[in-house]
Length: 215
Image (cartoon, rainbow, N blue to C red):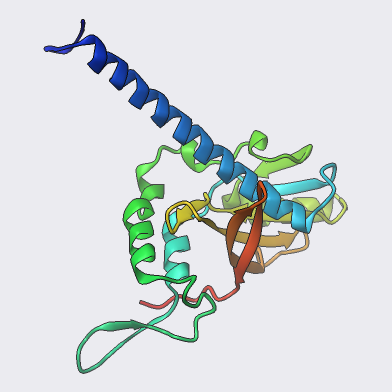
């Protein structure tokens, strides 16, 4: 028997607990691998050459923003005071499902605020590319100006949120900011990416540019 606190476990209970911990570890590892693969599969659709240099902002975009964008615009009925989703949104049913969206929000909303700083930062090993350089989004303008003053080659810049699962684990959703070292006004292309795994590869099934969300 094994003693945990003041509770004495039988051999069977100890084995069951060990199995639960192992399954939890394997599930978390698989989820992390899928998220990493999705980001890299997406990047490869834009930049096929793994030797190309890429700049990435090290801070992850808030998952709260991802969830709000997924919901899209809503309007308030002046008679009932109820909010209704705008039917013109790009993410349309059946991909958009209110119940699935609410489950995603319950699981991931405020995640960025609850995580440690380290968990909210990308590291170079998250990406398959050989020449990844991370920099702080807070120093974006300084970074662009310095790059221009040094007359360095024009290079792609990206920002990413942590991918989050939607509709069980059928889809992965994340926000992308995209620009170049000429983007003095920031990352000018911003969109929401929804990916689905097909034949061991994550493929883009929806790309939404509509990011002006109203509540």
